[in-house]
Each structure stands twice: as C-alpha cells, then as structure tokens.
Length: 339
Image (tube, rainbow, N blue to C red; front, side, top):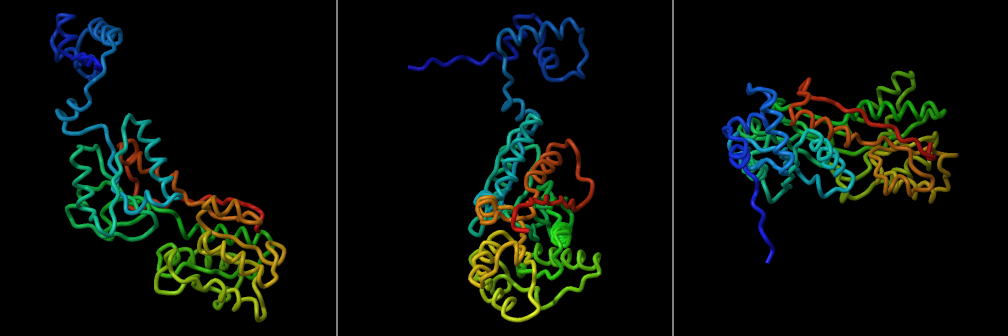
C-alpha cells in the first residue's frame, strides 16, 4: 500500500519557530507585512529546509481567486494551426505563475455553460477565443465575466479584443508581389468573412499606393455560397478557367488562404502554367503542412496566433492591460519560392 505523506502546514512551521501562523504566512506570502528581517529569513530558511509547499487551493479559497487563467474556446482546439493561440497562452501564463484551463464550446454547448464551468475554478480572469476572426454576441452577464476576446470581436464593443490585422496583411503581400515585378494581380477571396472584407480593402490599398488600377473582374469568390467554409463547394477551377481563357491574363494570384492556394496550384498546372515563372501565387495563414509541402513552397502571410496568445496572457494576468478596445496584431510575411 502506498504511504501517504502529510503536507507540512503553516501551523507546523509556526509551532517549530514559536511564532504565530499569521507571521509565518506573512513571511512566506506577503512582503508588505512588517516584521524583523531576521524573523522573515528564519521562517523562509526553515520552510526551504523542510520542503514546505503552499496549499494554493486553500489560499485561493481564502482569497476568492486561484492562480488560473480560464479560456472558453469556440472550436479553437479542433483546428491544428489555430491551437498556436492556446499553446502560446499556456507558455506565457506559466511565466506569470499561472496555469491555463481551456473548455471548448460550440453548436451544442453555449458560451454561458462554458463560462459557468470555468468560474467554478475561481480563475484570475476569463478570455474567449475562436478559431477564425469573426463577430460574436454575448449576453450582458457574459460581457462582465469575460476580460478579453481573442481572434474575434464582441458586437457591443465593450470587451477588449485581440485580432489579426487582416487589412495590413493584404497590403503587405500585394506590395511584395509588386516588388517582384507583378502588376496584374487576381484575388480569389473568402466570401462572407470579416477577414475577406478587410483583406480586399488591403488589396485595394496597395494598388492605390502604387497607382495601379484594380481589375474588378479578377476579384472572385473562391467558394460558392454566401460564406466561406472549408466544406463549401469550390469555385477555384472555374475561376482559373475565367482568368486564363481570355486576355489580358494575371501574372499573380492572391489566394484567400492556403487551402485555396493548394487548389490553385493544381488548376494552373492543368492550364499549362508554371509557378512562379508564368504566375506567382501568394496566400494567407501559413498552414505549414500545406505551405511547406507545395511545389514550389508557398509564400504566405502567417497568422499572428502566437503573438495574440502572448498578448492575451498579458491582459488576463494583469501584466499589461488592454491599451485600446481592438488591438490588431500584424501578420508575418513568410517568403518562399512561389513568388
């Protein structure tokens, strides 16, 4: 039978040193409590010698808060590339002496239930994260419970939000294509998404900055339907047919994401076009299992998930509060051989 080792308590230390429990607690946990330096050092030395470990559960119950950050996640942990937010949050939380608890919600499980589950753990703060950039709506009680939204915005605008800077990312990748000598750029965008709308704005910004006219008929939805999903019926083959069976023809294609780019590669080759000699291809997301393995490897804008996770940890831990209601985090250009 496994032997149970009794946990050393504050009372045990107090009895050995002939001081009060309050004095021991102050020496170990609260530098603001006044006592002689010699007493404080004596208490800490004995605690270290005997291997004292604080009972964080009891301490949390007394203080009404545990050293935990709670995250209610909408689909986030089911998407391999989006889990970078959680990984980064977890690593950063540990740097603040905090642990991370994540619970997933979705169509069959409401946000309110997820928040209630996290609240039972008495977390220091709660964040809400999603797998893609969109607007979410919370009941008033949830707005009071959630300290920051990550990869999404709450419709009331009352909760600080950390989101990717979609517009600037599109302007950056288009400017990269211009820098490679491309002037006739088509865009196979993601219909119905905030990301698609903002990226189109950035696409136009870059053209305006160079005084290059946008060819309106070359801005096309990559899928059918009002809103892009990875399960929506693709229009990539017909888009490439439209672009390369008439003149003039584009010398670069910007894709709404790396999945779209994967299809564009195949469609271009069926039309006898070489990448990047005939047509440059660029994209968004940097899903490395796609982008690195394409031939040639794909130039793409990496979503700033790691930076978003670190910034969320700062806010939730109270290390650096939100400076504005919406913080837009820049993407990173990952240049490979497709441009």
